[in-house]
Amino acid sequence: MKKSYLPFLMILSILISACSTEDNMPENNDQSLLKSYKLSKDANGRYSIDVDLVEGAYSETYKDETTNTNNIYAYQGDDNNSRKSVNSKELTLDNNRIEVDVFENDIQKNSIWVEDENIKMGKGQISPNFLQSYSLEYLGEGEYVLDFEVRDGISVAFEYNVEENIYEVHLKEGSSNGKEFTKLYSKSPSLPLRIDFVNYILINSQARSSEALEYAMTRVPRTGSDGNF
Image (cartoon, rainbow, N blue to C red; front, top):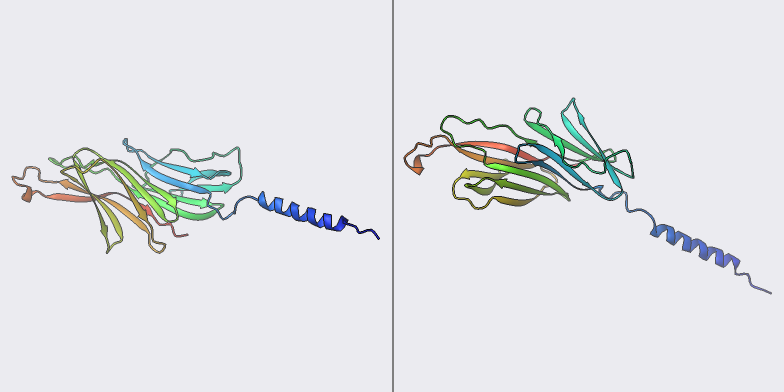
């Protein structure tokens, strides 16, 4: 009596086909669609947002005029009618504030914001334009990097205000310790990220001694993230 190998061969074929299909399956849909996004201010005072997407994703962006919020949506798939990334999209301050909310497949993932204004000088004051340019970039996994450049003759110091949970960058006329700086911040899942540039503006430049000098302190700009989604 002959043995039939047909059922065995059929089962083997199904198993091979299943393995092949599994190998060609797309990556986990839970993977973040955004590699990073960055809110920047250039030397001319213009703000912009840059978004870097993973391969196979596309983005759409619009401004909610009722809340003055810039919304960025990232989607899985290929849409030839949509831009693949938001490259140097210019943003404008509304009531001295810019807010960007980030969504992936319509689910809010994060937010990043800045508060800024033009510092007015009084008579005899030294120019308070200590900061030339800066950016705050989200790298994922709660990691943010702050890059900034100051003008010549500015001293830079980093401090942490424990009581108010604010990372402070102190800028003051004095002995320069560099012009370009990079600082990495790790955001706590339970707390917002706050970063303030603290400017010390001389208000009595005619003082005869350094001990008699007086400064006005301003917190401009302020930036951070409320993301805890």
